[in-house]
Image 1: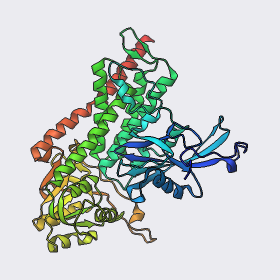
Image 2 (image 1 turned 90 degrees about the vertical axis):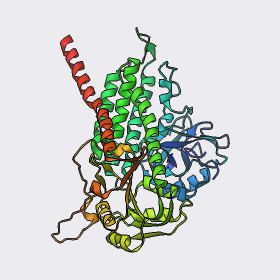
Image 3 (image 1 turned 135 degrees about the vertical axis):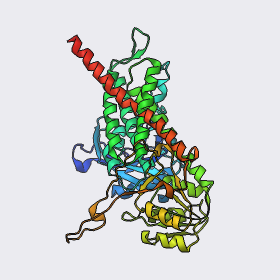
Image 4 (image 1 turned 60 degrees about the vertical axis):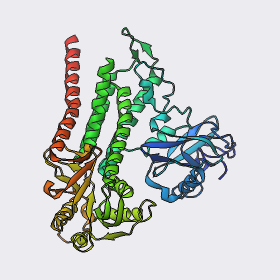
Length: 503
């Protein structure tokens, strides 16, 4: 479509603006891969905003929800099976006085399986970059402490309101708390993205509200209060920690990000602020993704023969793709039945060259006893300090049935999924997902159950298979990360005391 990336293509510049019927409606899609988004630079072949960076955009002819898929295919060469919609957002409305045009941008966020795209003539360059690269971070000065790197990739000027459009579909504390489709590892990355995006915005606001200067110690200063930034980000981190209380990996990765930020600040003898959190969030997103990939690779080396699994774990999917299964059985995983999607994904994957079967949850024990299954492979939302595993409801029954049939059970999980807490908070799903009738019937719909440690044969991590003693060592490592919160509270109290004494 000619000049469909945008905002919009040229129209009658004499048309009045301000009336909704005369506004130019466009779609903008942010494609996400490994926590980066695809940014495209508009070429000279388009009529507006040449040389500026944007998402996959186009004139919304007809229904935006339908048009966005057309634009993705035309501007990237990606077919519908390579991307999946995460969410759409509230439209962004603004007026460009120079163009005498009012825009209405309909934003979308898609997960994307690949970084290989084919540019159309509407763009002359592309970058996969952290979303914070959309902010005006390229104007950051060089810094002896390396904080320039926290800006992410420097991409230059973006089309108007690109960051605003992204914020409408970006992950939030609320979206993480409500997500019942993605696994714990995926949601932990989303949590780090929330911290990254907010810290990046605070860093950008520093640049627009003050000019850098050197203080008496020769340290770069920006006329803002790093302690206020830290307090805001610490409060946000606290809300993320409580968003999914059953998911240890989310807590551990948020704690590591904040603890690492505090360590960096101590190293350069400056008050910890947004730049340190941004730098830490960017590095910890990469660390987390690498840990999950390495855990999957280690598990894949152990997979051969007939395998059964349940629910949806991205780490398990990667392990199966990297293994050599002769057949895969997938329990449907009621009530959301995410196992159906997993079975379809495996059946259409070029990396899986074996039959894939889906079955009811109730048939799991029968499948284990009659189908010659060689191994159960499941993910974990949490690994408790004693080696017990918290995972999607049905895991406990599957593992007990496997023990009866002498089928080994392998749990695939990065060490960040080990919990520092002895207790567990088991979430419950929506009542209506099980029963929405009018009879006086109580509904029990637990989202997770606990599989005893003696029903698990191995926990395969990025460090290899963990023994019970090794789990204890991981627990101690992770507990040390939690001290950032206590240290932060002490610092806040000391600051308050100092201020009161001055009064």
